[in-house]
Image (cartoon, rainbow, N blue to C red; front, side):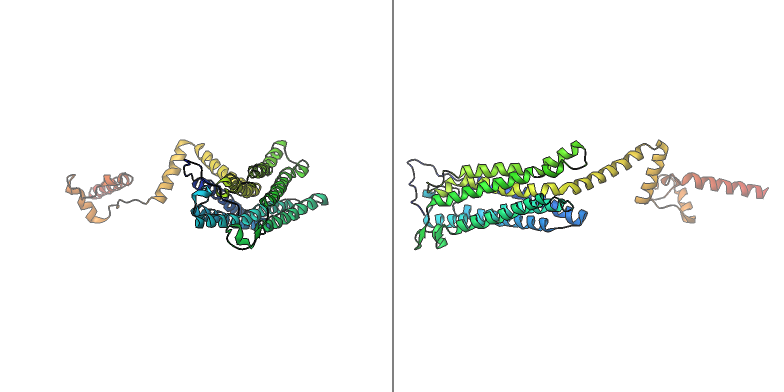
Length: 369
């Protein structure tokens, strides 16, 4: 570990750890939503959970562990100037910082591999071997890049713990070598993102679909351009870190871009697979609106009868129907008796009962005559 910078006179203790964690947590939650939607779409709608889905879930799990390490390094002092930290705080923050790098590298790699496997599934019925060979080449390149980059991080010092504790006996390589490998890793990540974003052009143009739908599909599958731009920006942001030693402060911008790139890569890998879920929701909403429209087109009287029939089924009458001699006797109690049930308390049955009683009285009169 390099010599620690001395504090400048009158310097104020600053802390960007909260900013780093807020951005990382927000993007991780958003990527979680997209992963859950993808898993739901594959299992419940398409019923075809494949290897590309399993790999993106694994990439997200690495992102969760990476975020956990970020919390640990910030709690130890990451995001502050090194000269404001005690020796134990500096050792702890750098320990979690360097330990989290391989997780980030493999998460980015598995996101690209998931996209490649998804495109191979799309091209499963095609006979163009060049397209499939190119996707297998990108898978191989992503794996090799991840393994070499992670090995470079872990092999920065021997033993490894000397990377964060200078008192441990051993030796470290020049920081310039470490950041040169970071440049190579960023360049290969950007190449993979741009290649996967532009690759769909080779087969979308041959699809028998309307031009508007082709444009929509291409826009969804070309979101990887955002990841490529983030990879370049992250690499450029780390170019001035090699000659410095205030790692806990100077690397915050690069760390923020790293966590954003990681989660955006997961989101981009999930977006093209959500077409079936969107179609399912669209059909369900359209069916519901069509039923509502057909109800509104009915004649007013028919709609009213239909509504009364549904209410009579869903809401049973709470008023007891008068029945028997005792109920008839309660009619004579008068209107002041609130406890007496009258025919008016059941307006739908009162006319029928009154008419029936009138007919009985008329029959009795005829019989008496």
